Length: 153
Image (tube, rainbow, N blue to C red):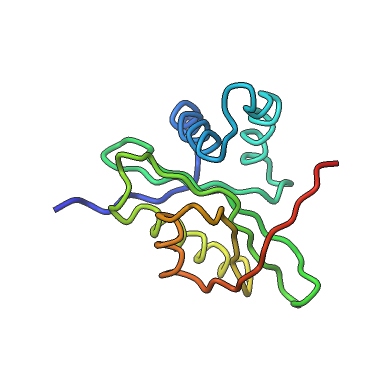
């Protein structure tokens, strides 16, 4: 029987494993090669996780001593609630480790962190075409039908 992954806070010693997962996550969403994020963004993202003044947090999933999944989230105010909400921004697991409950455990760990922070909601978005992700998300949260619009400035 496979042991459940350990979900824990990201540490500075995790950089190489985190970076590999981060690059995989970005490639999944079309940010690789010529469309890759600038290195400056990756460096700033990494540094933000360790700055207490920053709202961005990170957890990792570890199996048999190997970091195989990540989740990034942040707490923020909302105009329709008195208490903060939590935005689950990035979730990624190593493709060879999928289907074993790691994504579920990472999301549930964010739920717990949000509860401890006093949040009343956790939300996220994904691409319509992310069928595998959506199959999991439909079990853990409610799809509200919102469509995301963005405009680069």
